[in-house]
Length: 203
Image 1: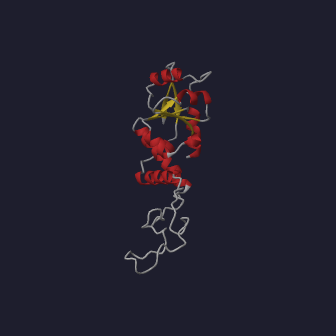
Image 2: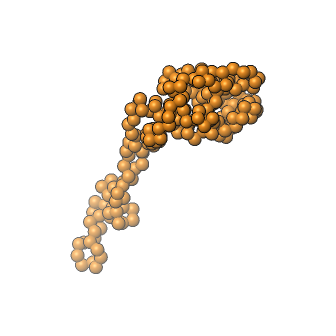
Image 3: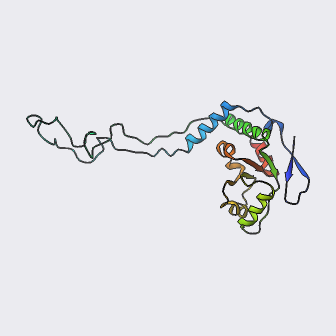
């Protein structure tokens, strides 16, 4: 299949894309698994609370066992005491889940295919900026109707990245930085011809 390459000069060019990569059926179950795995791997898991054995102090019995009229107590660091430990304390853990590379790549391919069916996948000619200029980038995006878009490059162009950094709803990434979440949340996905080749080789 072919996609028209959008550019500000309105030159008519196209790029060939693979049917096997961008023409798959949408596998919702697989995509969901890839999204859950990615989000789980993004969690830090560094939460920590102290149990009654980790709280400082409390070695001495606060008062005698009998005769005070109060409930018996063995330590002031009991969870029912102010300043005591936490009953079911949070501990650091690893939230990451495993997904096979083949399944992950297949999920990415499925997302790209669905974006293509919904006319949200576009091919663009990569703009060249001599220096970072948000105004020029905004004009470029407005002309191509990409004011809310994810732009995928083969290699990072620092001037392009800095020009788009302060524009809301616009992200510039390389093929290596693609993930299922950023693809699904983007209104439109604009890919350069060179990036298309890398995606096909990867997926």
